Image (cartoon, rainbow, N blue to C red; front, side, top):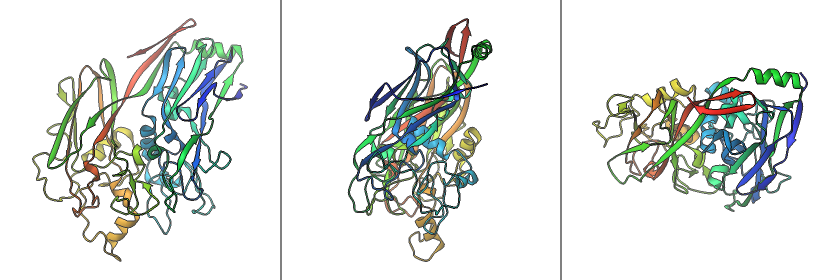
Length: 455
């Protein structure tokens, strides 16, 4: 089977907000497995060797949402794309993370989650570890582009592998960009404190493989009578800042009503411009320039103190008692370690391996003499900082049709100066809690007509 590689320029491009591509060649079938989106950006004072893309999402941090449309019909979509891709950057085991320089070892760092001083998904070779990769640069000629498979954004296309224009005659890929540098960049300033400004997206390209043999396309269409797909949809709610004691919030989500939900993943997205988003020292404080994104900046799921999560589906609790995490009846005034870590275990059972150690999603870890020079504890605090207090995701299975979904979310206030690794009040801030759900859909084809429906 012969195929053609098409390099498609957007028909519409605004370097701050939006790009639109048209896949409207006649009498061809596009192959989603051979579809890649090339992205990049540059800005004033985004100096090479000092400024990098988001350490975990890479260039995907530029994308706010992405949709594949046929005319006005939504074939596939992903909203809140940056936060989802930041999780996917963590969604691998430590050995795999290391092999792709997700966690480079050097004299200055035992573990960095993400692409610190390394390109996204770059395989380790003989190159010096200090060689810079994945940088925006100060001009279009300097900046590095990233190439992401479209299936990383659009889960539907993992199973919907062929898009024949005989059926989908007006295909459009619409990409919405983020304008928040805390999502896009790992560093927002240079070493001398000069802030990056005037950040501009490079005109993106869509690279897609297609075939044009009529006989092969007819065979493909004949095998597409009913294709079951999984998509990632999202809803969200706001958790106000917690001033003292124990906070408990119950929120009803309506975005998944009348749909089957397989898996859930919850992200604690920070809202502060600095607290828990930018950091330099081992406690998350903005101490000196350059300001560096804590873990993955505003795309991160910020660690919470004594977090407890439960889901009530159709009037029934998914978990017993107060849910995953601490029991509300437990003493909240002490610094009692990280508990039994049920949430991290359930996350990996649900979504697969993640590059987080046991206890690494808790700010309740007590380390005596954290900042005493020459101690093992100082190594933990100074060299692995974000590894311990950066990321905090919650994942679990529902596997049911939802008519009513309520999230019960509890956390405790933590005071600055408490002798924990998260020696900061950053977990207390207001949060945008994003709830991602894996939802099955079906594409039904009859003749040259199609229908997309939820199961």
